[in-house]
Length: 242
Image (tube, rainbow, N blue to C red; front, side, top):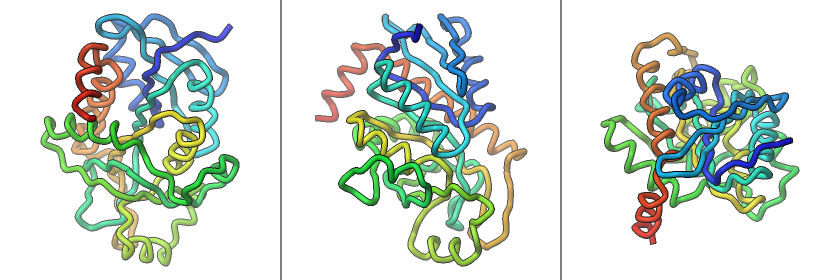
């Protein structure tokens, strides 16, 4: 039998980030469920209630299946955590990206017809995330990300073209998750950490960089603070947004 979940969920793309969040919540974790193609962890919320942590995922179809499931179980506000490759020279390994819209080059979004060809994230969640990010004194850019199904087809011509258009970064899930959120009428905003650099048409991975590792830890703490906010604090934050 599937569990019931609270309205807040953290959708975590990578296993390393998922492990970090599970370590931070191990004393409050109530149950863990094997959902066949991902794990769902139910955590006691400050002040009562629960939130969920789900992952890991690889690519748009996988992440959308997880998000569909968590929505069906009751989630209504979903905070994503993942990585991206930088297309801009002033966006370096360890920086934060707040995707507010996306360029879709994945195949999943076409199955969720929405009015906009450039799906957008939830602005209220974006503002709340920005407030928390500012407390970490981290570089953060808001803007468009390019989502692809084919990382080995991130060609020099595409990178150059999208860099010149001001697109910040490339990933494999964001456009599909934004589209699904709009289609299902739920709120979604993600925080991405720059894991590698592509802007000069050479691939520079930063996965072992201590700056990147520390940024991932900070990003995890930010996501956890958002999903674990007590209901009273959450109500005040919503009123401030109005």
